[in-house]
Image (cartoon, rainbow, N blue to C red; front, side):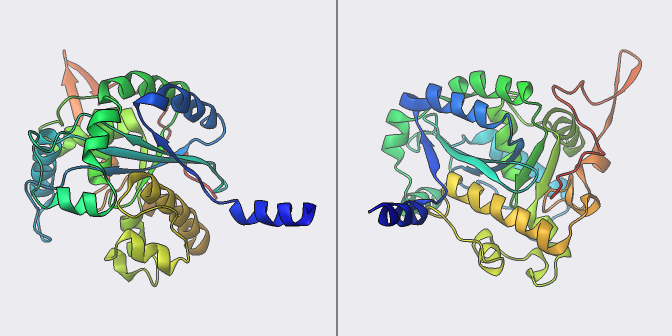
Length: 298
């Protein structure tokens, strides 16, 4: 009997993505806070209502940023997936925060996005009725990020993820007009960002970065848990793929840190110098530490 129970226990041990709604938000955000005591690398994914303006593949940085800014400023976040890991690649937990603010009947969206997201399991009526108001999320989330000194973030094709993240954190209500101001905001207020799609360009066998998350996971032999195009599942797969890439390819921080796929330069190099009352300063005073020498180790 004991042997069968142990076998069953081992078989059922798999990553658990915690679904967070308004009803369990307070208890889950407390568990999230506790997890961050020892797991301070956050891998994120967002679900949002598509793109009003698409950037052609050969667009210059300024055009990409202009369209990105317009899209994020016009639309609302639907889901935020967060997977917390430590420096050894051990995962402490995955959360999928479901938000109530978006209403497809009145809010801006791409017409194709709604059926696409519904096909992948998103229930917009449930989100509207039972989801978390973004304002309630921000009030609890930002103090935790500051308290735990979180400054390392991992994404896959993450420009939009970071854009929606900084709005959800309450750092801004609209994205800055220039990409230099955006880069300054991210570097000073968010910290070190990694984008696996950018990193894949420097890894043999990863198709020069011209691949999606699902394809990357299969090449790296990383199993997906949950449904694709759901923020929690995507963040968990991205976290697993990240540490496999670091381990397998020996990635260095020079080619990893501070890049978002689509931009030709790092955020650090785009960071602007701001003159204010004749005092020269770099960006704004950071809410939490940013140390260029700190890298995501393995």
